[in-house]
Image (tube, rainbow, N blue to C red; front, side, top):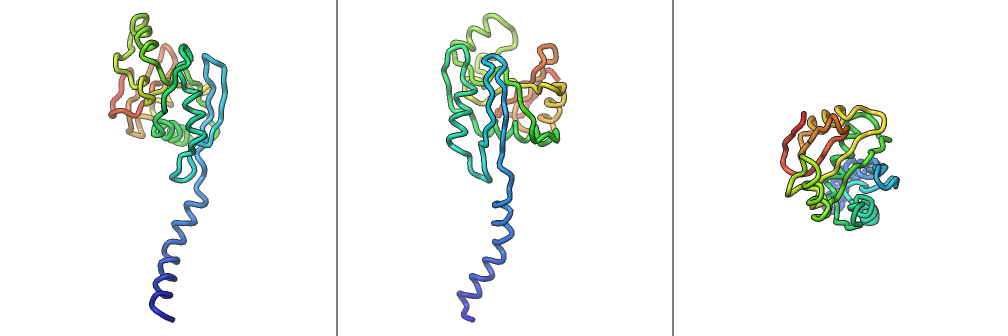
Length: 175
């Protein structure tokens, strides 16, 4: 047995468990219902470490500003956050109800003028924020799961019954 063969066999033995783990890793699937457009989608947005380009494009369209039709690239880390929230809650089949994804500057300005609590430089403007709830679970559970994950911003709007999640700095409000 020569040295190259031995090194190759040794490396294969060491890498095999890692490779097997990658092959059996569960694809990341998210399901959404947009409450303003009544659209529904379920997408496998990531397999292993690889984001699925066509699924991300579908998400970009789904999370578009429903008032103007404008869309932007949604931060894939926002999808990871949503996925981790549903896993943290123990429901791999959970469907998120979406109230707001991307907001165009025009829509954000209009909302700032007509309602309170809308940030001038909202992360909705850059595809890094979403307002969600589950149809059959109190929103405080989403809030608590997101806070426990310790990633991004978490805004709790109890009276309006939704949670704002974003991929900005770690912070929380309305809790």
